[in-house]
Length: 258
Image (cartoon, rainbow, N blue to C red; front, side, top):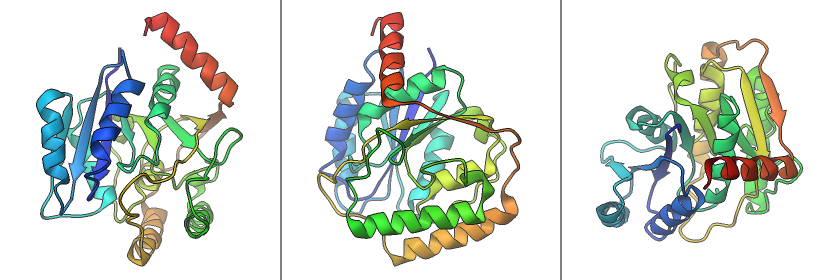
């Protein structure tokens, strides 16, 4: 069985991290996995994670005092993680941990990526208010105009994805800001992507970290990637319906007896 590392960048999410760990463990029963927090918090989030680690050895943390930023946190987590598959998800519970098992199953079929999408049939972006929807939609369109590698992806500016670790071995990643998936899509080598539907959830606790600075960093990132993007020929993107996704998950669970 392939090992899965879930990298979670966290910033002042003390009220969410314990629930997140419990939900991930429940979703991945029977799957070899680790949860790796890369934490930039200024509150007591690191202490909360340390308490969790005392009883859950598969939970790990790297706290940073000298650097901030979601994208660089994820990249550091990818370097430190020990899994064959690497997943990235937010700490605020808007990315539902329940989607991790379907993502893992998609990877087991031979995919290089699994990208959950809010924008295909069965998906839902109802967890965003109209301002966030506008920002997200604008960022998506800008990215797809500037970077051809994003055009086949329905939801390329999401922060929720899973990859094979080896595809980033030679990627020239120089992330800034908060859009790490765009960086990986543009610089990694891959050929097969599976998209699955998911529903983006309402934030349970804490506050959104997106601001005008993050928007400017995204534009800077897109301009930089126009020069660094690799050309992946014949990339195949397959989209699973919710019905097919559920059938394949149940088949996998029966096969693995989980």
